[in-house]
Length: 237
Image (cartoon, rainbow, N blue to C red):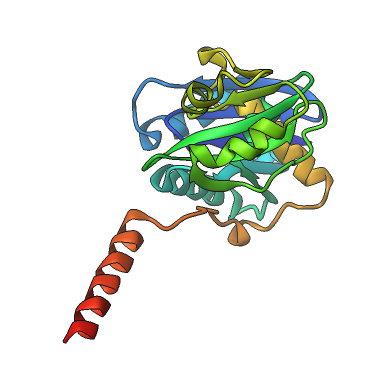
């Protein structure tokens, strides 16, 4: 089984190629360029380095959220563009699951991505088994307190929101942040999470591959606010 996995959910881009249990290639890009500039060249390099063509792939994986709305759409569009002509099965991987699968060890891992507006996208997993402990959510950092305080195992934060969370909870015994160089989302994490989904029969046809934003876009939030204000004005008339 040959699997190509990509991530464009946050500030970084990542690509990996997995053959059965062997990681053939992995790369992360954190150079400040847009994903639309970096992703296709990264995929081309990954396939060439792995000695594969797109026609030799069996499964495609991509982070489908939560994360940057624009970033998610870029990754999904590229993967669907590769998958549709060949009807390849696709794994829409939770960004938080991909972060968790990128680490190994014992304890609890919280994947945390900066969601702006004082919030993080987050989800918790057992680090050894990668079993999910919470659902993914977009929430204020302070709302993680009950989970963090009640966690019985060493707890690690990973992701581009890891430092934000660690700065709030670093006084809690057993809490740590992954080293900054290891906080970024790894292509291998996406690939391993996608492989697990494939083995569980959770892949979908390319047409069914959809984003999972976990909150309204800025345009939708602004429209809701306008409608709310208009409703107040109408009630006052």
